Amino acid sequence: MSINRLALYHVETLLLIDRLGGFSAAAARLNTSQPTISARVREVEAQLGLTLFRREGRKMRLTPAGRRLVEKLAPLWDDVQSVLGAESGMAGMAGVIRIGAGEIAAASCLPSFLSALTTDMPALSYRLEIDLTASMFARLLTGDIDMAFTAGPLAHPAIQTRQIGSAPLSWLASPDVAARWQARGETPPPVWSLSEQSPLFQLMREALHQSGMGTAPINLCNNVRTIIDILAAGGGVALAPTAMAEEALRAGVLTTLADMVPPPSLPFNVAVRASETDTLVQDVFRRAEKLRIT
Image (cartoon, rainbow, N blue to C red; front, side, top):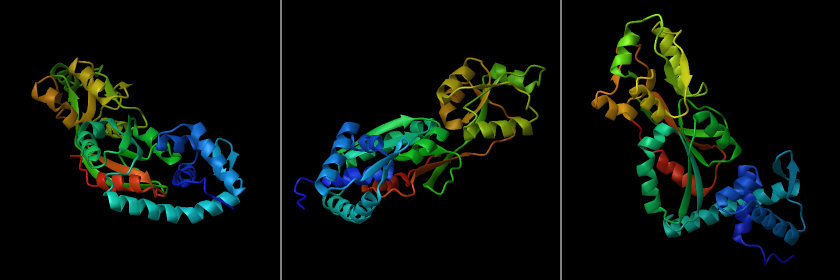
């Protein structure tokens, strides 16, 4: 049977649908539309006379014939990617890399990291989303993002991680609020934190109890910068990355709470799916491993 109408992008499309778990995820990686992905699959099926995918709930699963084809094509595609990457020094490789990052990572190492990537890999496009660790973890597992920079421990058999440093934390407040807090009055100032799913929230709760302040009211906000602004306006206290408050500390707008139990530093990791074989994602991951958040 002739396969003259099949091209490399057909092979790439099939493999991405399988690896990422759906047509929409493959479309996002390839920076195209879901109808285009569906059309490519139909073209392959028409040429080969096979049904390659079937729908199971919201997922598209390979049929036995589709699985057999993908298993044979996967090592061939990896070889093609390696050859093209070696010939171009990765500079000519094109695609879209979707990166999820926590706010602290985005404010520290990511700007210079992405700047270096755009210089070394000018044909690549990047989709950067700032989110909380719990959300990024779920989206990484489902293939909605290719890589995540996460705070706190992250352990799952389907996820490969590398620690890239840690961020020192401090208890912060305005000088006036700090004085009220340390006086241990009947009504302590409110505590601000990220969501209950955040590793920062867990560290904050533990430190409050260890310091005998477990009854302090807790307010939640999904943005550390906003929390720091609230503190500077006298709105409460918070456990926050010291580096993100350096300017306010130098200006005397914020101060540290010396009587609180010193918290541990917050570890940071870069993560990809353990099953990830895409050459582009692997190369960006290897570069990200060398980052250091301090």
